Image 1 (spheres, rainbow, N blue to C red):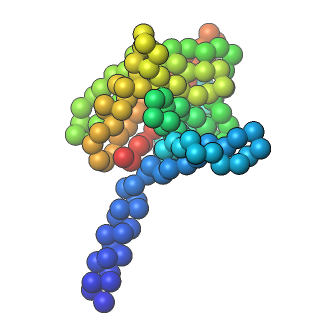
Image 2 (image 1 turned 180 degrees about the vertical axis):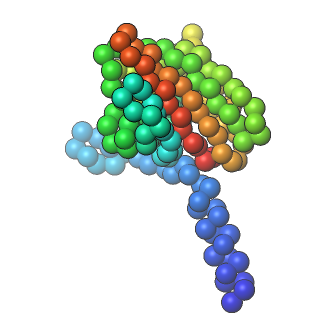
Length: 157
């Protein structure tokens, strides 16, 4: 019985910390293709002039050469705005180091894009930061012409 409980505890621990899962892209008919991506959901908060520390979901999609983070305020509404911006993302690693990535594209539709396009290599920077196992804290802002929002994601890698 003790061995069974120990095995169950180990499996639970592994599945709790194994946040990334493999998914597949679909074609125009909704059929699964052979092209895959890794994805995970992080939970955190956001604040702006209308709310403070409200729930926010962060859906990460890693295609192997770019990463998109869909920012969902209140857990369901995309963080849309009237203009796209380039933002600074700061990440606290499990060992306590603070890393900064500049020029991260934040679309009007509420998606952060980490890309390597020859000039800006934010994807490579992000991947080099997310190498430890443990809890990361990612913070960034969306600075608009008329308002601004701040975001905080808790990532379990």
